[in-house]
Image (cartoon, rainbow, N blue to C red; front, top):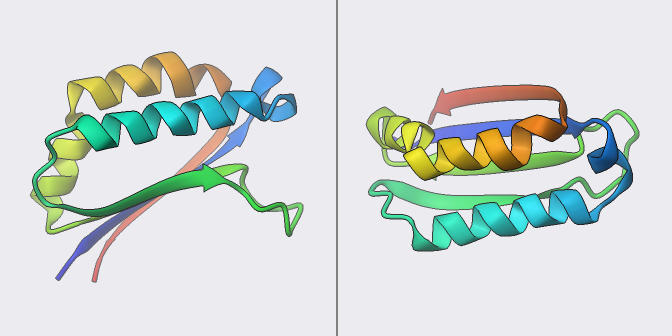
Length: 102
């Protein structure tokens, strides 16, 4: 059985107006994932909302892991935490997350 993590962001301030900011965040995250040693990570993707509904969040990350322990290692990874602090948190207006098994 797999373990899935989904996080969505609605941007505030400059990131809500300038698509290069979320695109830069996506590039930073993708670079980290490409270089990271994250055993148990089955799949990972992120990107800006397609803009098909006004009520949607602006950006999402979806990651699938072998198990909860693999997710916790990802969540707590030092580089991941640095990216969140320096590149994501300054622009977040709203954040939602869900994790589920299955």
